[in-house]
Image 1 (cartoon, rainbow, N blue to C red):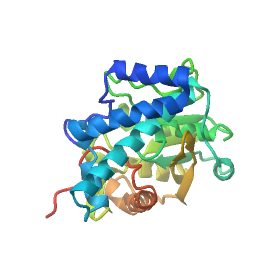
Image 2 (cartoon, rainbow, N blue to C red):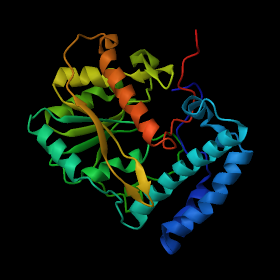
Image 3 (cartoon, rainbow, N blue to C red):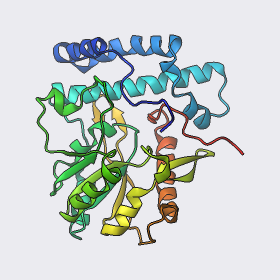
Image 4 (cartoon, rainbow, N blue to C red):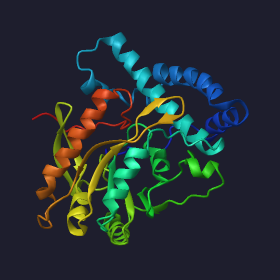
Length: 297
């Protein structure tokens, strides 16, 4: 991660409670209406509203000043809509997942190998509610997730009384959570991790992405090689009000190449290629709000 950057919500707790009130008493569309004004204010008048400029400069390199402002508003609005939908999923009991049958069948087929499955996702689309799409997968489900200290933004299951079948693995724990992930895979479980952020730069490799070079975590590929678990690169684009669909862009196994994470750069590059394809199709649903790119040499 970029120094000094945090993934916790930039909004105060009171703002979250206002949105939760609107959803509970007026539905998601009332919350959307309020959101558009909030996003406009953030986009025009706050530094937080400019956080997506690094991605937008790469995705729309020829955009003029007005076009950049428009794209910034669209990106911030898309992020806000995803957060409203996530809260609504818990408050209103609406999963919002559509078209999951094919992906569930694919995962159940992979689980027949008895090696578990690693789902490699990213901070795009509705990744926060992604596992709701996998309720019909016949396995335990784990997600590598660490809530930032002081974050007031609630996950969907916390709105629904805190009950969830998901289990969480702390990616900042011993060896980056690798022992927990490997133990889960050995029980033929599904483990979901994000492949676009790392808590330790020494566990990353450099890959091309949107015309530059970024560093992505590589330990997940070493885990896949050690356990024999297949990797499914899966994203969850937002298709409309409260609607998300799982989208698998690649499935592959990782051969054993030793302990040096640099040996797993080819797999990291496959992930980056899939992520770039997502960004081409869903251009305002990339939610890494910091400068991922290494300086040009």
